[in-house]
Length: 441
Image 1 (cartoon, one colour):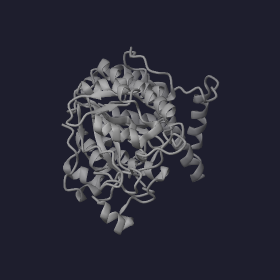
Image 2: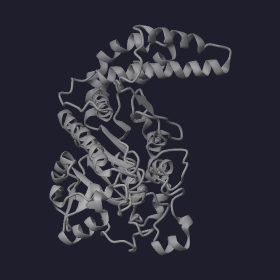
Image 3: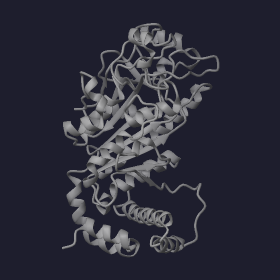
Image 4: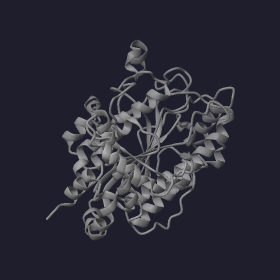
């Protein structure tokens, strides 16, 4: 009997996918769904673009610490009474008032905070950095380098692969008829593996000019014809076009395969991106995947000025989008099968500037949600609000990270089912950290 994977390979090569796939999928989708529900796992990585101010995302609430916080943050300090208290920690902290959904998820035990984390090649102290500045990540405080270092789980400014792509290399056999990694929005280093690259999800954006009906089939026919060209460049380009169009057909069928989700999503670009990811997960039976990785970016957190209103708006967009996504996972019965985590270029200085903003810093706080983790806790330690201490790199509240991106990403790789040897191959810097990966369970 012909296998599903064999069928899809034949269809992709012959251009039959668009014409024959619906018949095939209606026949096997229920069986494939049964095979992937119990063992299915996915991760969703959200980059808070521009450098989210983690110091105002999580705020100390003890009176003495809050007094220090307020004095240093000045015009950008969040009123103590407005913060959303987090339960179950020794020191008292609260979330920014825009994070109502995330605070409820955290206090419900389904989310945790990873504190003072950032790119590191190896553990380092302030004394070591002052003596040898090259121990800091390359191009520290640069937006492009910071994003690339989070996406690659390294301290290299211009990495060639991302940690999502390297995991995708290892789980490709579990991803069904498509590569295991998807991007909602712009392409990134995160999704580039040694042999696998991500597929871009279309979010139904209105920024694209609509194409006439039937033009896709005409373009596909032209590409199929060009793929037989004697000109290697034309042939290879056409083959890529055929492959991409067939993949998009399959994705479109996947997003429409499952029962329509009742959960309403915000209709921002970020909300639509999460809705597309949720729909793709809901239709995973079409693809036959038991492992998937999704990546998207959100906001523009480079708040050098007018931070109170800008930051509040971006955090609100994050909160409503992620809140809807977590509700959709519960609707699908997959709240323990999908793990959501945040990235950001870097933190921002603890001190505010004269334009009611804050500037580029280093160690930041990230969130991990869902996946059946042991939530309601903070992993690591949030620095006390004091300048020029052992964690302050430059006197402005630029925290030297206690934990490395590598340690957090490696824990997610382990959650995805990678063996210890596979984790070591994906995260080569992990061996330099004696604590190893952080513990999610």
